[in-house]
Length: 146
Ligand code: CMP
Image 1 (spheres, rainbow, N blue to C red):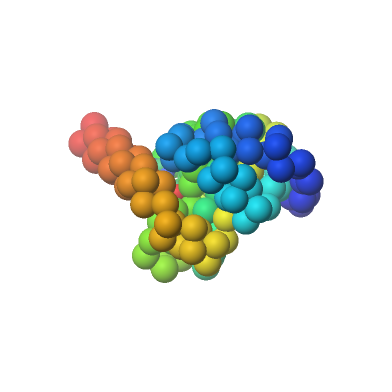
Image 2 (image 1 turned 30 degrees about the vertical axis):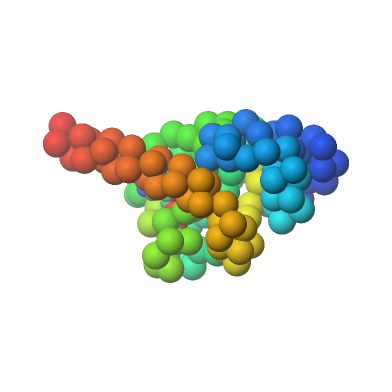
């Protein structure tokens, strides 16, 4: 079971600063964002999201690592500073894959509603997510062609 982690805002801001999609945000903007995020700790091997479930959260990896899996296939391995769960936020479809912690991990979660409320005033964050989604699609295309 994941457990909720209480970070003082200043520590959370330091960690959020290392998340690539938040790189353009100022200290004040990160402080505002920190108020909207909840942090959870996951054990190695613990499933964070299940393929097919409804998805209402964007996950930012503060510490640890996670694998994106579909059945027996590993689609990607994501580390500290990366994110997942954006697809269901964008298209309102069920989760496209399982995501499993593969190390003890701390993840910051933004709910769909908090994310879109925040993103409206921070288009740079959305652009960074789109850039990363494009890179992931290229990698998936290459894997298909291999
Ligand atoms: P979502 O569909 O909300 O939940 C599962 C998440 O796994 C998905 O959002 C993406 O963040 C991530 N994901 C799915 N497929 C891939 C892939 N091919 N490469 C990297 N990440 C992926």
